[in-house]
Image (cartoon, rainbow, N blue to C red; front, side, top):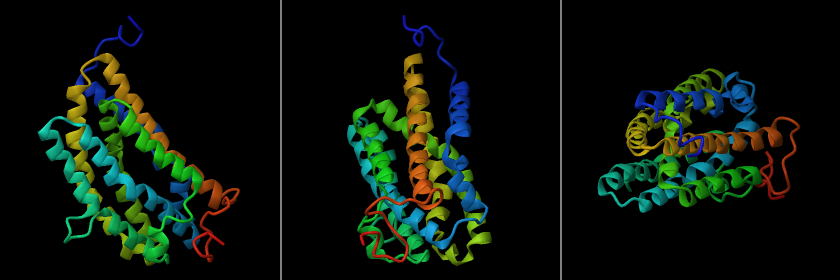
Length: 252
């Protein structure tokens, strides 16, 4: 037996405790970029860079979820998971998360075409988001589902972010519909995902895969903020082709 196989299966309660411990250590609420945001220390230009780059991540979420859905042979799982796609794409009548994020970006002073064109996205952000595609498509199905468990921690960060935006950036308050929706969507989604992972991580090796997938997802989120911090905070060196405030989407 390997060292992992030789360990005892942890209980569902201990599994959740260990997953939450990963979030406490690695989730991007601890990143210096977010801390500056919550302290009211970011400029409008830095918030524009954040909204623009984060759009690339937001835009691929339903595609990522469609990949996960397509890998399942369980109709009950597919019925539950497809809600996530509608939440972000909308239902054709009510706007979904992607549209709401565009409106947030517009509230920073960007225009819609500038955002949806995806010009000016930092290479580090693009590589990190594309790594998420690799995670959900090339690693085990258990790992793909477990990677979504960052939603265990997102509600607290969203609530804090909304409070701090209203306090420090009141001109951005009109763009908070995305976060308002996620306050209820994320807990609903993660309740299902956590129960599924708990049931299907039925071996010690499987539990370790779940832990590893959650760490990898936290790394993907953290890496996006690393790229933003380096380009727009310290040392403030956006790479060629990246968004530059006051220029045509960083292409000049």
